[in-house]
Length: 375
Image (cartoon, rainbow, N blue to C red; front, side, top):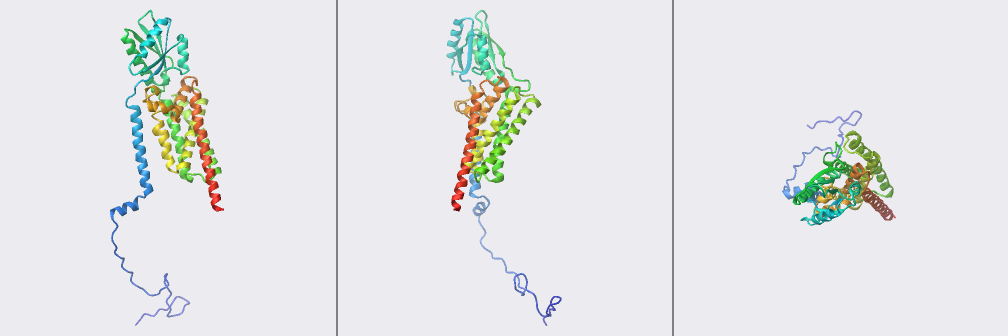
């Protein structure tokens, strides 16, 4: 006999309520169908999208470019046309020295005559030359003036070349560092590392703005907001970097105000460049920014090896890229009273203005395109 169902309280005996699917009958679950198992390639296609595969290949290309750039720039530093002033109380001694130095194999030096020692020293401080040879015709020992603050590797290379040339003439050379490195600035690299840190902050700030709200700003107003945020970040980053490298660690001398201004401009320039590339290429723009700033910019910046020691390609592109312009300007501010810093500052200004204009223009065009599509 079937079991009687008395129903819920207040209900009618004999009625069974429907289950969640509207059927009061109890049925055994159907057995799962056994289809063909997906193959390994199908699993790979499901696990890794085409876009992800392309991004991974892009990362691999960046890695190889990074290795090629750094090893290519640094594996064989060779002096090439290092600017050198030559002076003496004897014009004949200057002419003879210029003749011999110009004939050195590989053109390691670019010698030019200076009126006197005071002029030669002034040219070093103005960053017109990297050293000066003071010839004493009444003795067998000459003096070589160098500027360690411009990079100790450059001063050492200049000393080695001149000492060898002098030795071939039966003479000796005494080295005098007229712009020595600060006690906390080992090998004159602090300015380079400060610039690298500022560059990293610039493109990471721009990348975070893209990750948080999309790589491409939806309209001009949002682009200006991002540029405003980047500017505020640049001001803070420039100040903190200057304080750490200067007063805190005592690694760099020079004007705090000038270094702060340089840091602000450099961080904003790199960030604006990154925003512009993101506007052009989406998230791939972050990789393009790394390609320009890190892969191409850092090894050609003249940090570890100043420009006269780099291969032709790197010493050509270095001054035009943010890390190179920033490193030169930082050393000029720290050791040379800001001399010869104007050119690099204009380079950074061009990157900053160009990046901001491209970012804003692309966003405005994108906003207009969406409005036209709606109408």
